[in-house]
Amino acid sequence: MQLHPEWLVPQWPASPQVRAVFTTRAGGVSRAPFDSLNLGRPSGDDMAAVDTNRRRVAEAIGHAPVFMGQVHGVDSVELPQAEPAVAGRPIEADACVTSTPGVVCAVRVADCLPVLLTDESGRVVAAAHAGWRGLAAGVLERNFQHFEMQLARLPGAPEPGAVAARTIAWLGPCIGPRAFEVGPEVRHAFLDRDEQAARHFEPRPGGKWMADLAALGHMRLQALGIARIFGNDSSPGWCTSGNPSRFFSHRRDSIALGGSGRMAACIWID
Image (cartoon, rainbow, N blue to C red):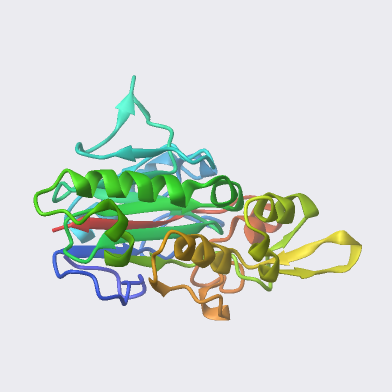
């Protein structure tokens, strides 16, 4: 495995057979404004360039990532095969889970929050694409439920109530709390489910709010009983919008540049 030196490798206490990486915009062939490692086919980029970029990632990690058709929903799918598809089109889902070695769970992001999960024994891995809509609607809860079910089918699995305590999570880069201005409907979507979410919104003039997406993700994982959470701590270095030389950002780039690329969070069992 030969990863690009500018890609992020999670610093977390996962089992040695669990591998994970978050690609940045470095290492690809796409031209501006998608320069250079754009992995998003629906982005407006040249399809041949995107396919070349995806092949480069597959060559670097030794396996082809499974890219779903993400729809900002809550559906989670099991990935025992290399490419989930129906009539040649990717299955529409925003989260996935597998216990099959060599199958790479992957989610594409360009401001949304990527969340990776594994159990401490390294027998199951999962990935979720958590934009504000999916996060508010329960994509992490659905993915963790699927994660528990997958683990329960394996020999020596912990009791369902003990899974969370043995789960490790990593949050990747997303739009940060200094850049994510939202309307009151976004705040209400979270408060309707948990009033404690109010502490992750700061008021702005005109009835707007600054939202801390990573902190909201932390809160949802903690509510599930997952205490070992690593990665994005809402500090500026994790903000996709605030680091244009390193990260794509849909909100920052789409209006200013006419388009934005996509990065990927990948996790698999070696």
